[in-house]
Amino acid sequence: MTIDHSSSFAIWITGLPASGKSTIVLALKPQLEGLGLTVEVLESDEVRWIITPIPTYSEAERDLFYRALVFTGQRLVAHGVTVVLDATASHRVYRDFARSAIPRFIEVAVECPLAICMERDKKGTYRKGQLGESLTVPGLQSPYEAPLNPDLRIDSVAISSGDAARRICDLVKAKFL
Image 1: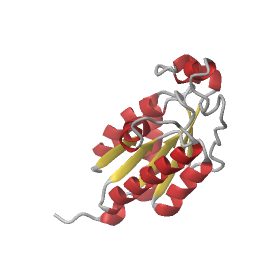
Image 2: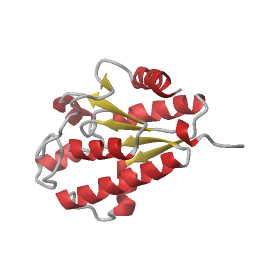
Image 3: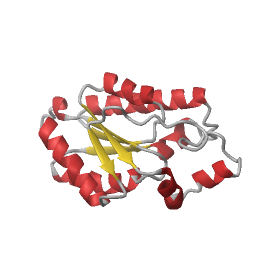
């Protein structure tokens, strides 16, 4: 069997912490696989523990982490794997770097008000920020630079994760399949 490497691509799901990115990705992966794609999810927390086992979330560390994440995604795409990057990527430059490194690329902005993200926060990210245990929470102490021109905007308050995943799959079909 010959793999058509030109058919693989990357999707970056970005948004504030607890905006619904991972929930959407959980619904998206099986839908993409249902299209006959081989899919790998690069979830930022999982990858971070490998690259920076004791994360400080400093700017230099974030730059290293996102460069490594993009490199990994780029290599997987080059080998015929569709990649879903599930990562806040609070600075546009991280996502712009991915777009420049991976020609077949979709950026999805998951939009959700900060107050709702804080209510949804199961990991305690915002609580740590409010208590001063973390000083770099995107949207709280450090800026989150929302995409200016994403390929798709998802309002995670207005639509379900399944509907969001279907909208992403519709975009994938229109752009790449």
